[in-house]
Every structure is written in C-alpha cells, then in structure tokens.
Image (cartoon, rainbow, N blue to C red; front, side, top):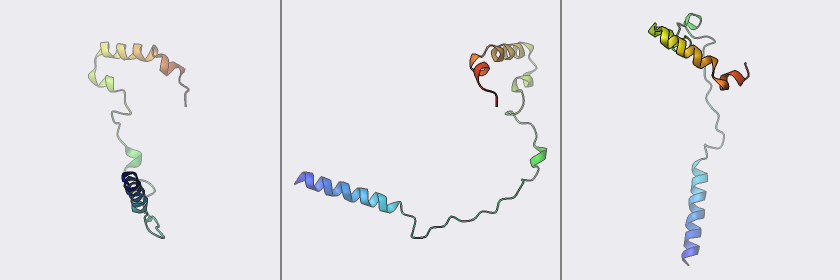
Length: 82
C-alpha cells in the first residue's frame, strides 16, 4: 500500500512539474528594438581588458617577469592562433 501511495505521489509531482513549465497555448516572444550601434561605440576608451595592465605600474622588474612568463608559457605557444 505504501508503494502505491509513493508511486501516485511521484507521478503526480512529475505531472505537476511538467505542467508548471508550460507557457501557454500560443506564446510569442516579444520583439525588441535594439539600436544598430550604441552611442560612442567607435570611441571606446581602453579598459583593463584591452591594455597591458602591468605597464600601469611602471615597474621594469614586473615587465620582465611578464615577458618571461609569456615567452615560456607552453600552453599559449601550442594554442592555435585565431
């Protein structure tokens, strides 16, 4: 009897879960009007992601360490260039 109750509860919960994910009979996603280009798109300033960040410190030791690390990094050297 307990097995049957557990089975019924299980299948009802599965059915409820599947039914709750339904969006409606004829769901259409709303249309978005996005601009072709964003304001100041061509005048983007450099960010830390696009510049050599270690040059901000003006430290020759750090510069040499970064150059050695980049030269001897095997993973970068075997990676295909895009």
